[in-house]
Length: 225
Image 1: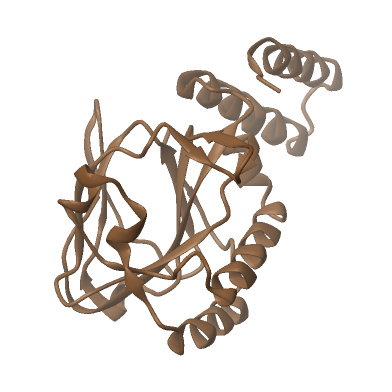
Image 2 (image 1 turned 30 degrees about the vertical axis):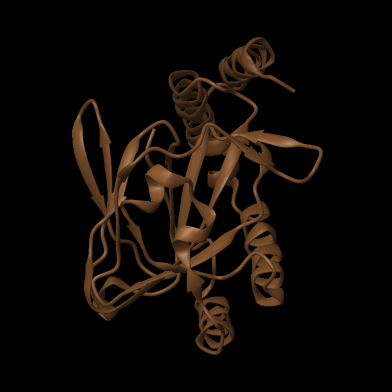
């Protein structure tokens, strides 16, 4: 499931993020990928040792907690600390698939079920740089307003097109979901959003309660905690 999550960050938060990121020292993005990824990756990232990365990463996680849509779509169990990247001067990242298992810390691992990109500047500020996600329905091009995020299955082939003018700045991270299977997450998301709409429309309370029971029993059946 590919899901657009608007307004993860407010306009004021985006301004503050950009102010903090304008003065940082970026590192070669190939430092955080393996040999295969390094062949197709040309961008810059904040080093893992960066204090700005840690501080802004915590701010991203706090913002995600305010988003019911993010929770409904991702059903997060673990989230890798957010990272930050910059594409400019022809920088790109060719088609690749994200690693299946990642180090959360020295003693814990994270299974990458869901990938997320949080855009930190508007598409009008750069040319190119679209996130291309490939699935069985074709290729989907994504370039969202600053403060908006996109989530999609980590198993998808995806790339970032070359940025030919300006700079594209974003945060990115991975989520281990309570529900491993993407099709099951999609069904739970559609059921959840339908329940919310029926509730808002004043539907029969007994029917809404029954659907809510179905949702939680499916979550209980499919979740990995």
